[in-house]
Amino acid sequence: MYYLIKVVITAILVVIVSEVSKRSSIIAGILASIPLLSFIAIFWMYYENKDLNIIIDFSRAIFWLVIPSLLFFVALPILLKRGVNFYLSMSISALIMILFYYLMVLVLKRFNITI
Image (cartoon, rainbow, N blue to C red; front, side, top):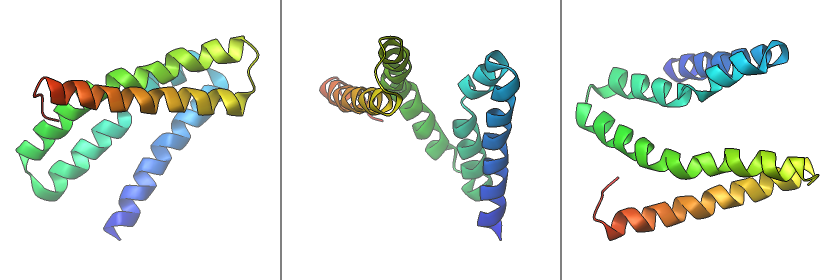
């Protein structure tokens, strides 16, 4: 039952952003740019085990890994404006993001930054 509640709450938040986007892309963008998934995950982690060290490590990892994720949002509109098919644009943007995740992890390891 607990997992069902988690899934329902999370799904409701995703649907809210999706529905708001039909009326206002700016408001939906603001809602989507809030690290909602991170907030929810941190809340559930704290609720489940109250271990602050896990939350600290998780927050630090998010900080470093959000940087390569931003490249998705740079690449996607560029590709779409150039007339690249939507699905291909999504795929290329995701691949760029994944590549930069890998590179970020290598850089962090190189400088002994643990995530």
